[in-house]
Length: 578
Image (cartoon, rainbow, N blue to C red):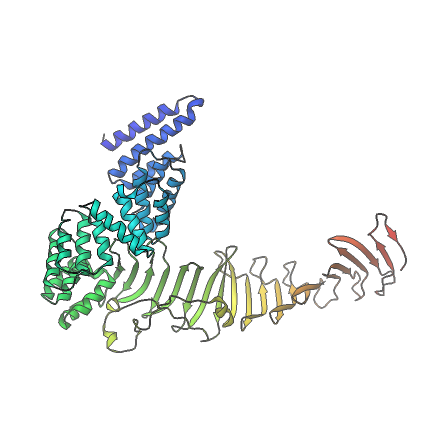
């Protein structure tokens, strides 16, 4: 039996024993069972068995849903998975909502939570979390570092530098604080290099410090010394090799190292390397990337979480995804055809929208999410609507020029500086018609013809059976008349008349071309009229006020003249001749 199986058997025995306690002790035993699960999950997490730890923690929550240790462990196991960032945030939020830590230090969990918030640029939340703790951050290096990062992200530079300086003075062997200072200040010279060397140790934090220093230092023999020390210490980031390519020395050897380290899998590094190479070596990259199949990423923060993903087929860009917040939610999902955008999905503060291009930047259709799980698709008139997506200064479409000889993987690519600007009112003003859909429906249930953004005519399928059952005609954007098919017979048996945009009168007829046999008027007093013999003369009329019948009149002569009224306003039925 393996060690893991032995642990699982022991856990099962403990759980069974506690579950056998009498009912009066059940609540206490539930917490004890949850604590046992927390111990097991914590050990699995330390053994780097994250999925198993997550499973055990979730089982433990069935016994004590307010156990902060279990929630925090779920967050810790999900933290490295960018696509599940929001699940990790939810887990940490539950942990700090209950604040019932026993196996995990609250400060340690807070540091991990704040680090995750800082990674996705939610610096204000990270700072609020830290400030809400009853902990002096100077006594906890991880919290102090995350506090400094949050302040820096919020633009509170002086306060951030004060925290970082405090960390440098107190934690003499922690390179993170000095690296944070380097991110703000230009490397001055050899004195800074001496400060870097004092942190020398075998750790990923020291490697990141070396790389940050090398990136901010000027191109001198000293920088080459720093980069070579980075490689000697086990560093494997292709950015370091790119820095040596800038020096222009031994570019052939350095290009080989750059490619070996995976530089040909990062779009921004590839462009920078291509620009730094001699023409002969540039041709090497051109040949290598001409028919590239696969994915390139962009990771400007160098934190192993991709901000962008670009998919290529036979050298052509077919898809570009942007997750600038690094929270697993793709903000832009762009499909390309022939090196130009064809379809874009955008998720932002204003919700979701998607658009399809005809001849870029002319827009063929735009989809918006509406309330009530519905969405609308606008179809612009001809070439009246253009929306820029890509920065024209950095993006060169296919034009047969010399730029055309450079593979797409080596060309610069960036969004329009102001982002994707979509004004729904402007879209509506330039649309020929709009289709309205239910969620997940293949066909629209309503189509509205537009002129300069104002409705002309609408057709609606209220029954969702694929057949039109309501047509409305508009004037100046207000309905004036309409037709309904109430019975689903394919014939419009109700005529509608509007006044000032409000329904004024209904006329019901059972056969095409026949005289209406029922009328209903909508005022403060609602009027219903029947023509039983369909001779065009009303036979009965009823009047309602606030849904209460107040008067019924009969035309006894069949000539449309009401001569027998019945008044329902009094408590006693009053029948009189008029």
